[in-house]
Image (cartoon, rainbow, N blue to C red):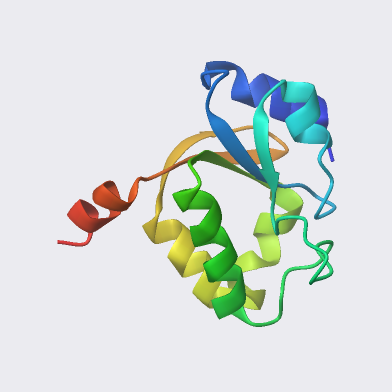
Length: 126
């Protein structure tokens, strides 16, 4: 993971906003730490699952993503290494995330999106 690339990409994100990251190694919190932001890794750390891998069941991943969104997650950073196979390996999760975010910026290592509020998602789906 290139934490420095994440830090430079987050420069336009308000410091009080909460972030979710999917680093090149899932579960790696360095991007959050070095950007001096608060937030979560995805999948979120839990004693119940191996959070260094996405669950095979996309419905479980969607539930976890929604939980973070409802807790106030404002931004999602996906390492390009994760994004390249994401759609083929987790098509339902990829579609759900696409419906609930707005593209913000891209670096050579990260794809950054603003996570929409439930109200914004509802407006978008009309």
